[in-house]
Image 1 (cartoon, one colour):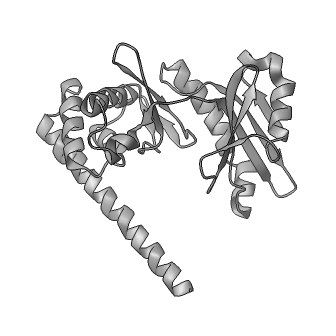
Image 2: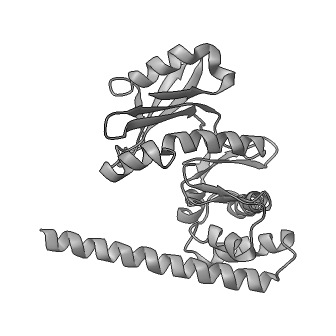
Length: 255
């Protein structure tokens, strides 16, 4: 077993471990639990979030034991780095890895639970969402800030940014699902645009984001930013739906 607790929560180490051990029998299920299962727990007057990662296949069991850090450990470590860099993410509390003779058996990531007002997905799916363009522009500035700090969030997709509204009409952004992330000294223009291409299929949203990004990124014109981001977006959408069609065909032939 490999168990690590955020020093802030050291006094609750035993309670945290016991809560993880009771994961299968207690807690409130959050989301559909298709791949990874998330449950909510009341803990010391806080709501905490425990994510149980899907049990890996044999190859990954071995890889996560000897060659790579588990998703739970990466989530914990990346959350810590993000907070150190001033980027919003729910406070990391702990991670736990259980091993058997083959390798990684199961793993858990514990963080504070954040009640968000919305995610980026609502901006895509509800065109008339209140204050839509303002949120989108603030989100673009947030993403630019990530890029300036060399943070490449590889799962920068619609559901992985939680958004909370402040009383003064501004918004705070919090990254979740953190296990795929890279950190660089700097990011090229192409890296930046590719990092934004999975967020929306809507050309009008890409146009707004390009306009806002161009106000901050002076190395390329707004036209160049839009053309590049839209190209990468269209390429991603084509690839996404091609995979979807292929999966549908495979399911049909398996019947």
